[in-house]
Amino acid sequence: MNPIKRLAGQTAIYGLPFIVSRILFYLLVPLYTRVFLPGEYGTISVFYSYTALLLVILTYGMETAFFRYSQEEPDKNRVFSTSFLSLVFSTTIFLFLVIGFSGTIASWIQYPDNKIYVIWFALIIGFDILTTIPFAKLRALNRPVRFAYLKVINVSAAVFFNLFFLLFCPFILKHTTSDALARMILFIYNPGWGIEYVFISNLIASIVTFVLLIPEMTGFKLVFDRKLWQTMFLYAFPLLFAGMAGIINETFDRILLRYLLPSDIAEAEVGIYSACYKIAILMTIFITAYRYAADPFFFSYYKEKDARITYARVMNYFVIAVSVIFLTTMVYLDDFILPLLIGVKYHAGKGVIPILMLAHLFLGVYYNLSIWYKLTGQTNFGAWLGILGAIITVGLNILWIPRSPDHYLSGYMGSAWATFIGYGVMLVFSYLLGQKYYRIPYDLKKVIGYLGVAVVLYFATVVVTPGIPLLRIGFHSLLLVFYLLFIAFVERKEVRLLWDSIRRKKE
Image (cartoon, rainbow, N blue to C red):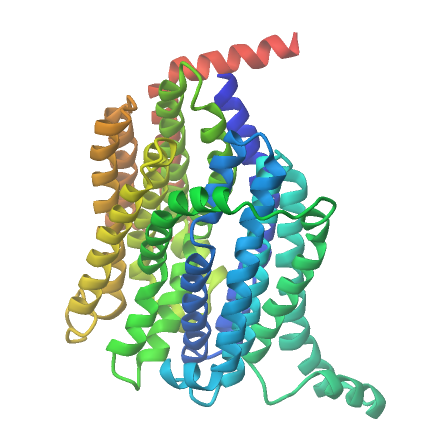
């Protein structure tokens, strides 16, 4: 149990502060969905979709390459400085090009009057890229506390400035009787702006994080090892395509919705879909925190004799965790989660939530499976798997989004199912290839059983929905308790070992 305990501990250390920061960040969703119209929120979502894609392109797999070669190279500072300087160089070129041609780019993405948005997002992307390797260094050095602290600072700054500009400044201007205070507020605040302050807040947070990471970027000689860089780049380059494909699966549907739906409803539909997408908060938080801990763990443990058995056991526990998260979210969706997180005018899209939750569950399982091509250095398979998923996702979006509004798969429902199928296909093919090139003895009966029972219990909540809220909540809670007892029964040996371990510690 020691390696699994260590991974669980690292996930908890990364996860707890990350959960706090994500909760802070997701508090903005209720704010945005009440302050902005769906069309305005749709514009925010489209720009962040472009940002996610560019972040993957402009880091070109160098983060994973850093983890790989920091384990193999004796001079770890050389690995860090080479990968860091590589990103500095490419990011500088990107900033010069985007800022220089910002007007053309704004017209190309059909926001011709918003050239300043392009410049702001170029700077956000630039600062975020430059913090990628320093953050990876903290993970490689097993410094999760500082890593999490800086992530919390980043999100806290973004939340603070969003609240300052979107709530505090308008409130003061509306209620103050002091001309001096009003002039002071107007000096830093433009009442005619709205979503602009979402972007500005993010930019400020990115700058603050970059400044706080300066100690990780200094204190040693920066050296660019050309030969090492070539080796790292050849390893990382296929991961660029895998990452691009992953982001296309994750975010490109919002861009396609904007361009494939009629212009009079497109922005609003993107806004509704994006808001409901955020309900996957618990799944996203856990998977992200897990990945922060898992990547260094997998690379550091793969030389152990029992590595493959350990990876299989990790998969079991991971599936248990994401299945519980899925079922918990779904049983309390209508009574608690949906009313708290998003405004009523966005509730029309709630049908996509279970589909997207399961899609992200598949994605989390895929992340576990994908360790085989990273450990064996066959990252080209990661690229092909990602491209396959992207082709399926984009193809189905193009096929389904423009369908007539009365068709079940039209609009954002088509996007949700396309994401589900894309991740599902990637999962299946990654498993089959992994068993050929780096066989891990996964317990498929348990994995499929846990997922299957969770889905069946979810459908039970759909079929049996008592009209009295208290009865409905009680029945749904009973189903969740049943699922937890089912897991405890199947894993009774592990539960007994855990209980004995706790009892011995008390003695």
